[in-house]
Image (cartoon, rainbow, N blue to C red; front, side, top):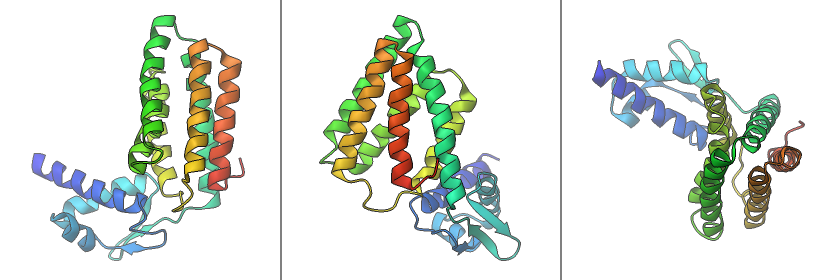
Amino acid sequence: MHTTTSATDRAYSYAKDAILDRRYAGGDLISEGDIAAGVGVSRTPVREALLRLQAEGLVRLYPKRGALVVPVSQGEIDDVIETRRMVEGHTARKAAGADADTRGALVRRLGELLDRMRAEVDGDRQAFVVADRGFHREIVAASGNDILAGTYDSLRDRQLRMMEEGVRTVARMCRNIDEHAAILAAIEAGDAPAVDRAVRIHMDGAAELLGART
């Protein structure tokens, strides 16, 4: 059982990574055999992995044909941004209202991630993305709501494949840093209205970047 589970996880990670970084583009039809060969596993765990990806809305299965990578739609972009606004607005307000010790510990973690972002503006862009995502993830996780944290992870996964190459310019990265700093300052001050403004401004920027209508 352990071997089968491990093979399924490997097939799932392989296919999901390929979809998110657009090696498998929207509209592509991928076969179980392609994934099995790429991972070095049999087709059974690949089938199980594709079922998981279908449940996440990333593929649509067609028996005996393979799995269609679901193209990104305008509706999906709008839904991702709208849901991020709700999740991140709520959890940031909750963070601002936490007791001083809890808020202080969160602020220290956020400060470290913000410093990493600053260090990677002219360096490793993938490291910048990891720190950026980690900053938001810390705020959501601090809510103590595992369902919201899981929802956030799914949203950011979906957003990855919506990002066209070249949109993450140095100017955009610097703007992100300034917007993150405003969110951090508002949480540190325990200022809920300032948190609302800072998150709204940041999400307006994300909506503009992705072409969302919400």
